Length: 410
Image (cartoon, rainbow, N blue to C red; front, top):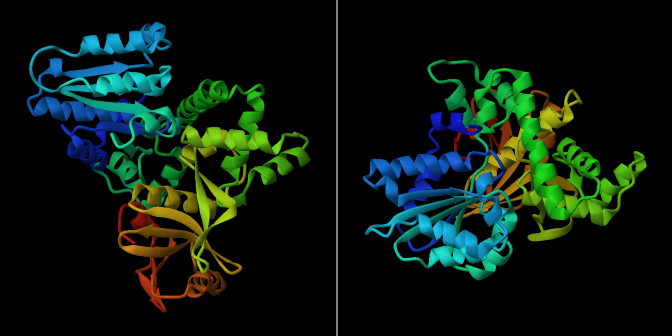
């Protein structure tokens, strides 16, 4: 039920991805945070299969969050036999969908057995990056492809909220920042209901997923670290810096523990780290990185009425949008200056600065200075929330962040 409203929103890109891999001898894996819409995406794809003439008996779904299956999760042989029994013996391809596969112990053995069944096209979802970083990746190297699903983009959110209407883009942006992009949250209109729903997701991820996986002895400490990271988006950070800050605030914690918690937050897709790139030296830097978060609505739920740096929130939205697009994304450094993002893809390298507005000449020059310091002729872009026509400064293109978040190319 929590993802029901996302059925109203066409998500053509992930659906096209699933369709492009249909009937190919490879496992399709959809990853993403809890309640981001993975199950609904598969339901939409199943509807497309039915519309294409696939019999319902040949579309099989197994949800490993179903409590009636709990006795099978600790025995991979029994689980394999149960799922295999669902596959019809009649001719034709069976499309087999397994939700939250990481809930089963030795799930990689179950997957390996199902993969080799004749005439089975296998699709999985998972809420942990461990799914593809451990035994499954080792066992199935070269036999799977992954699509990482994120909350609604700004374009998808606008499609949901502005259907048949024409509200000001600024109002829609403010609502997106406040509500976030989790599909069911985006369907709600009551702030208290949104907060309660997102709080439930946060608690499930922190207590049922991360705390149990890492065997966290002090869940309150884990939540405090989560709040710190969510409040610190856009700043260079490290496990040492967080540990020092927490200890100075009277909540002592060791650096290894912080590092462990950061790994847990990353594995659960609540946090996306961004490595630093030395633009002049053309190499990754070992020290310091930034952490961006999966959803700004979650940030508001966790932090409540604490002051918000609107510029860093915009930066966070831009980073997550860049992750939706092809290429690798880093935060940049050129001498003593910082470049918000460096994107490398098949089209080349693009350098990006992000600012709320540049009405003040000093602000404009400060943002341009970092881009001007970059040698060469690679694309350089300044994204702002100003609604002025696109402009160019010495080859640096200034464009609307609204347009970029709505899908416009850089």
